[in-house]
Image 1 (cartoon, rainbow, N blue to C red):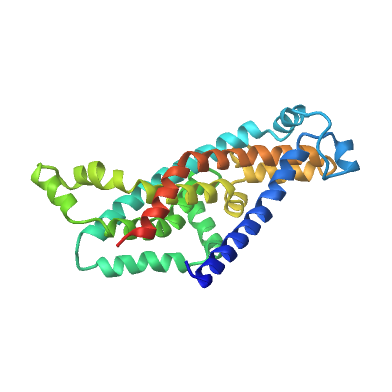
Image 2 (cartoon, rainbow, N blue to C red):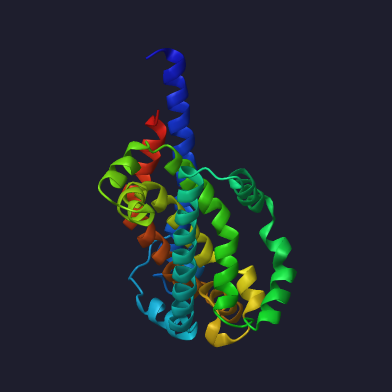
Length: 276
């Protein structure tokens, strides 16, 4: 290894390490402070708690009504996620493995969809949902979440599927499998690394999305977790430890979801790095 290559690797590791620290440290102290009493936090926000106050989590869960918000977020997030990934995988399969006249135009429309500022369409989406009678329902969030993330999902999966050899489908045809059997039994299983990537991206966006939920949902029984946390922070402005407890609970599903798909995600990144 020459000096230039070694120097670049050292710089890359140092830069990535600093970037990781900048992201981890605030989260770490948020979790630490969530176990403090308000007096301990007021004395020193950067100290460790004398005793772990697990009651902060129970109190924050009760005051913030997080059981309702958690359930709504889970329903909206997973419904939009399943529809987006299913439609995206099917569309990617046909775009990557079949040739038809409007293929280029169709692919171009999905690329164009990535260029549209999502929140610039907020007023038209509001009017459409109002006309359809979906306003203030779960569908008012599920449909926009699906539509706006279908383009990215297709671009990622289509690029991954395009690299598969045609021998895979030919062997399936020789065994008597149809198009959809080939998709479900052959193509989809080997697309798992790319699927993990789009699942994580879609899950994080759907779970954290705030503006569409604020405008399209007004009933307190249908509000998602970001809205519930915003209301809770507005109420408990003086109790920062409870705020941090609520934020920590909102962060836990994202961490768990990422850890469950981490292996597939790393596999996909490695496969992409050595492809060809």
